[in-house]
Image (cartoon, rainbow, N blue to C red; front, side, top):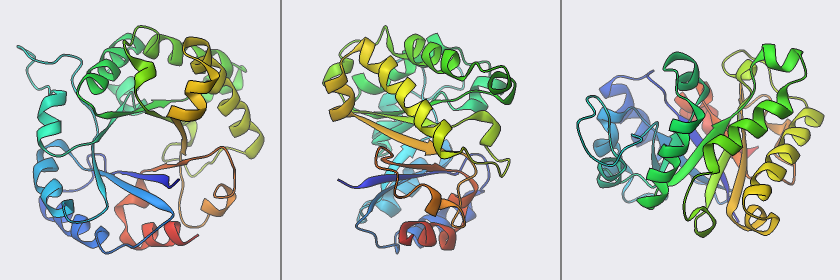
Length: 247
């Protein structure tokens, strides 16, 4: 089974830069990874057309918590589906922090994704302050429970959970192996309590994200329970991505 390598382009590229990078990435050949790119919403349709003849999948960076209606500025699951998205990031720490996304709203977004056959990439992780007071386990359990407990038909779908400790996002810091395994076991237990251990093992892909690049990726590629990576800055450079898939 291929691992995921999801590149979150955030709000970092303009139109011409997005098109150029999308075309460059289609030339990356890998049998190890399923490449997924998440451009800004205005460029989804065009990037989708560029990727259509490649093996690279398209992801949105976000989707609405509602399917239709008077929600100014929002983009529904059906809309991103029309653009060709098979994935969507949900609950990224930057949205939790800057846009005050609650775990309950994130749960609604997971439901919308599942209802429209879009694979949710649920992002979870603790802040530096929470880590310092040994609250990582509590935070992760709460995020998982509040985001997934009310989702209908969850056990019939595959999901991706990306562990992105907030203190590691864009800081140059990466999680150590012991802390990563603890986070994995906490997340596995929390999901299994809502569903089953069998569901987690067969339907949940566990990813790590946070200051990953070609220089430190080798610390993580051999970890058996890791099924891929979510990258930010490294995903904006085609040469970085090439080196990561070759590691």
